[in-house]
Image (tube, rainbow over all chains, first blue to last red; front, side, top):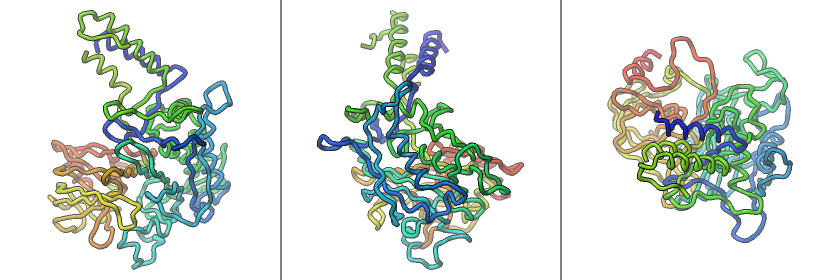
Length: 307
Length: 168
């Protein structure tokens, strides 16, 4: 690494350790990023969601309320506030609409949280043999089963290619305990402190914490991608018993407040010529300042100082 | 200017969304798969499903070798997500395929002669220069213990991957 590059890296690392850490946005391809658009006329910025009846699933049977866990995860993002203040820095309202019997996901204009209650295939399948949904590939939506094997949760986002504007978002969680070869998960709502669940201990313990999983997935729902920061709500790894992502990390707060600012317009990534990834404003200026310093130190470089 | 661009690249990336999955070994995946094949992608065609809510990409594979199961020489795999016109649908953790790409895929029968990839991105490796490379950027992996002597889903020589699948 050359001295200028080392200096720049050090400056950026220092910036990253500052008060406003970086956050990342989900790509919409070719330089765009995903975002919920502002309302067409001045009104409350709001995205509503409905929940397929979670109490009819195996989730949280050993304690706690799965609906409360899901709503708490959304509420954490609506209430995002920067350090030192309790006033939310975003006016995005994530509005719980209703509990429904519907289990369908996809582009239907309804943002749905679906806790899947059993596997769609295998010896523990909840799908009757010969059911029409098998050939149609619609059993997950029709019967509320989990059709993604060993995964714990996933988010489906439908968006406009030309702008990145999100049209629909859904989250599925795999509570199909009893599936083949451990493909289902013990989804719990037990508050810490509590022991981590194990083969021997299945109640009064923390397994795959629903609120923890949902808080992370709601970040994707809003257009955030993974962070490299280990302490981040959006960090790309978790463990059984993890409840640390229930509380928004500073970078997650910054992402929410920067993209959906109180009283401001939604922050897009501009044109396709611009990058999608975004960092907090202070980081950006520190980074640019470092570059400006380096460019001044290299007068023979055929460059211009950033404005 | 090259170094300046390098510095800029530190905070200009193209991150992906992610699903959550526990770490798994290739042997475990092989045990759960109805078929494991090495093949070449001949086409990848996204389309709206009949329900009008989901976009699925139909991936056609020409089988080069079969490591498990008995699929036909031409294999149709349905993958969630894709782009149709001005609408894109992204299912976090789903694998992507490109025309001409050489792959190893762990498959489950999906009825009506169709297949799907087992464990979404966990079940797809791209073969490049004798190395099988999984695309795991869309997955948030939960650390989990593996059986001794088994190897987690990660880059490895394609010959080793084949040996592990056949031995499972």
